[in-house]
Image (cartoon, rainbow, N blue to C red; front, side, top):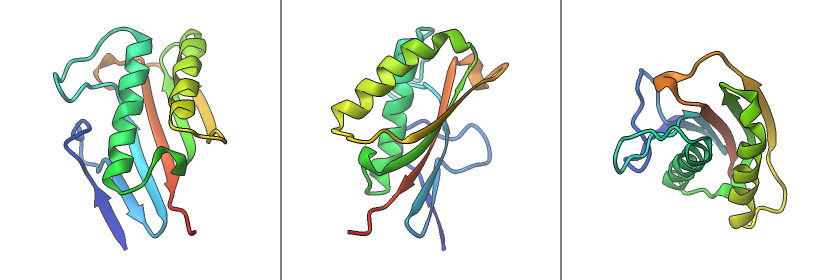
Length: 131
């Protein structure tokens, strides 16, 4: 059974899709971009964009009663691969802050453009623990 997951603590979809879909023990997140839900603004700074994007992902995961530790795979889309070192620092700190012992599997690709002219978009796969 497919269960849509939506929360007001993350940006509402800008198209015909759900923030996430839960099927069995798997939660599939749509790509999240750095829209700050408090002010609905987008900063131009890649560090802040990465922090906000990861915060949005965390909010959706928590709406499904899961945690950051349940993330098994992410895909990062960047408009400029030169931003990767900065993104990696924020990304690493995000997972270490949440006591993540093993980092999720990950892909990172450069794209020509992203919605709202943001610099980063991240999608995630999350697996509910069986124990």
